[in-house]
Image (cartoon, rainbow, N blue to C red):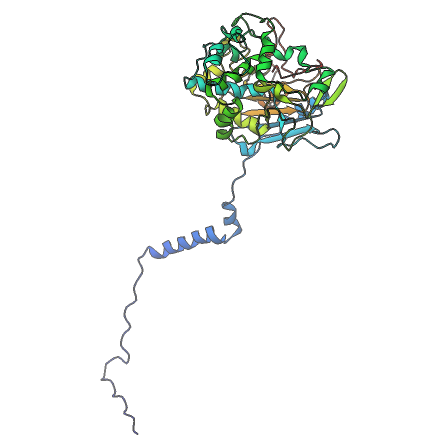
Length: 456
């Protein structure tokens, strides 16, 4: 078989056909492709250590530990333990926790940020907030009669007749909020046995709001309604009943629905008759006479809407930030909250102002109950706060209750050649001081063997 040879190409013809011309990318394609590759390298693979660090969240600096010396001074004055939480600029993730002493004298466990504790009269500020919300909704008026609300509402208090409530007919909601009602303070009734040797025996007894109010109304009023300021737990006992009469729900349920859930206060509760604290918690030490009693477990039903709340330092800061920042009240009611004219600068409608030695004014409240003292103070806009807690209600006569606030809100000036100390302002009277008493330093109530629900 023969093979035919290919014919030679004509002279001058190319030996192979020409390749088609290559497609040229647009002039911007190569830089764009390079940028996309670099970006994917940065986001997905972290090509270099330097580029990876660019993606790390920038840490928010914590405030300086300004309160530690004041906390140590409170422990030196007699408190087993003291703890504080500072929030600046509304940055809760960067809050500064400080502590001194111990939460438990037996185990020597330190104070912890997550600890639950009884907050006493700090309960009042939450009750006042709900009442002012109801006023904003026009479901009650601040200058309306408390007796009329209780007898015509959805839920008339059981065990209280119209005749029994007659002394409240001239008392307004506003006078209950700012403690100018003149009503006798039911926790001062010795038959309750909240102090002295009878406390240990009667600490687990259950009391109802109706029973406590009847006890208060058996005593003559200290003054005519609106005549003068006199701190009385009876006022907020009645306000809790007013909330229930107007809404048809328990006051604690209204607080949970209107405040705890919206603000995210997960460590706050209202125990009712429950005698134990939710975990984690330290111990609470109550001084009666010359003895120190572990008062961690007790039935707080005698305190009720005047002071039964259990909370944490974080929740206190978040609540007051939301309140003073305008998240819980419209502007009109927020202004009323801070209106202290009726009490001549002593108490608003659930909060009070404290003027510190450096001239700074802060807003907040305090509370004490057997074995526990707590206080919160904040700037007027709620963006700068400090809350602190002691696991005793009687740290000693040398304790300065304003020292923690002063340490945080009155930073010491850096020494300089021209710096000279100036005169400080006259301190305000404590909100529980009777008219005519000299200005107090704001220290937690101490030295007295009795310390029921706080007189802030």
